[in-house]
Structure formats: structure tokens, C-alpha cells
Length: 200
Image 1 (cartoon, rainbow, N blue to C red):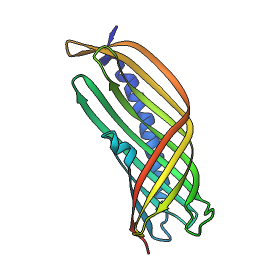
Image 2: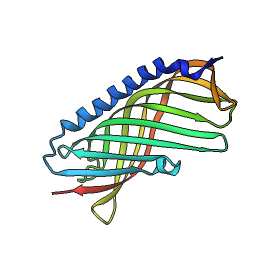
Image 3: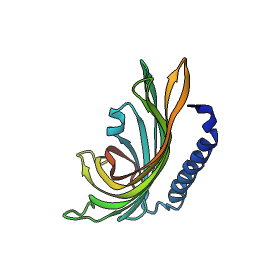
């Protein structure tokens, strides 16, 4: 077993990947010339239900296209259990307008990266970095108040995670395993409450 502090170099490399993803998201947003003046503030209710703070901003470029940047953060522990995550994500969407002039249906692409640290006992916990992406599809349900709507999104793709498995002895973390895994399948679920901040 090796002390967790020996993994600082790996953590720095993971943070660099996280920075790359964040800068890509910022670049997507910075190219958004809001020609129609639509800016939407969003909160993913699925994340909030797990005590995870989540917020995003969507810029409507034209009637059919938009870009989105989001951030997720959580850090809580209770009786040896812990759940911590930092994640940034960027999306580009194309609205199709099937069966409606309000363009509720959309498809798009999503990329994200972050750090995690979770465990439900002192004997086994994991922390590491993740990077992933994929395709998304969804539907916007408009409400009576035209400034609000609910956005349903699902995504399929790949998530790569590099992790250290560790246990805690005398308030010191010791690595018991190092690994890397690739997950293919559903990697994004969102039910977001959205508010149109500007709508000229």
C-alpha cells in the first residue's frame, strides 16, 4: 500500500485535462453571438435531488442552434460516507421542431470532465478523474408562463475514469488499487427547470 500523497503527479495531469474541457466549454460559449437575445438559466433537478449543486447557461444562437456550458459541484460526508464531485460540461444543440413551431425536439453533442471522490465505508473508497462525451437528445416542455419550461435530456456515449481505490486508517488514506475503466452507455440524464433570462 502506498500513501495517497504519492499520487499528486497523477492528480495534476487529471486537472490539466479538466482545464482543457473547461476551456473548450468557454470557447463554445464565447463564439455564441446572441443574435436573437435568448439566454436561458438552468438547474438540473436530478442532480439537486442527490444534494449536488448544478447550474448551466444556454445561449440560443439562432432558432435552430444553441450552445450550453454547465458546472456541477458536491462535497458532503456523513459517518464515514463521502460524495464529492467537480464537473464541467459543454454542449451544442440543434432543434428540429418536430410537430411544433416552438422547436421542442433537439439532438446534440456533449463533452465533460471532472474529479470525483466517493466511498461508503472506510475500507473502500475511490477518487480520480473522468472525461467523457457523447450524443444527446431531448424535449422542451413549455409551461403556461412563457419564461419557464422543463427540459428533458438523455445522453449516450463513453466515459473514461482513472481512479485510486483507498482505505482510511488512523485518519490517513492508503492506496490499495489503481485502475482505469471505460464505460459505454447512458452517461447523461437531466430534468432541468429553465428560466429565459432575456427574450427579445
